[in-house]
Image (tube, rainbow, N blue to C red):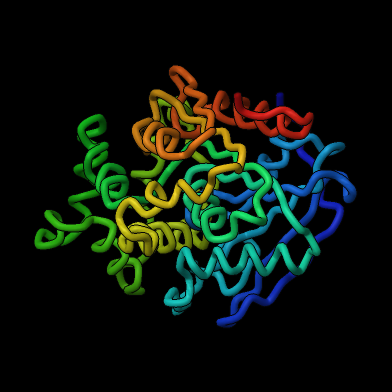
Length: 317
């Protein structure tokens, strides 16, 4: 259940405060069912592939580049760009400001990877604005999730993880690796090499899915630095969420139909997070995709199927 990549029917730029201006675009049917797709990362930016999850005849799809990335400005890959006004709660407020700007009352919200954390934070803050939620793959950005991604997954990739760790000064190797990288990335003298080291680790986490093919986005120094800065900035702060906050707040989602999609071979984030969210969210559906990883095509296929089912008037059992 995938659709062709679509071109935007409308684009714009929205000032959201603190000097940030967001790039946004709409796709599909201007009179269709409103939907928002939240990209991962943090810092990946909205990609054309996201439009393949939505039927262009059925949906009025909204994409935007979150603060500091993609075509939004200022870009975290530019020297000296301050990240102090780039937090989960700034992004939640930005989403709501974008909804108001576009005159949308309620919408389906999709988020994948980091985007699922942001989607949950938004939905729990503004449940009256969310018609349905589709999340996949699921991340909660708890301290345990950050520890897994930056250290625990090294049990499966010891050579690549040692390269990640050993890029740091010896005194930084036993603590919070994301915070240590954030410090290196903030220093112009060490930022470029640190960005390369971090992005190599990101590639390693999905190499079993990609067959070892490199993602060309990491060849762009500006993207590489901005992505690494934003990821480590968010992860070293556990997304400014109290530990377990999104699980504890799942009761606020009661009455919102939701589908969670996750793969059994996701090295970047084990199935446990999706399972626990499903147990905490009354009425949600969990779709487990056997042998799929974090970026496997099967995850997108299951997400697209869930979105299409909602558009046809169906929902979770």
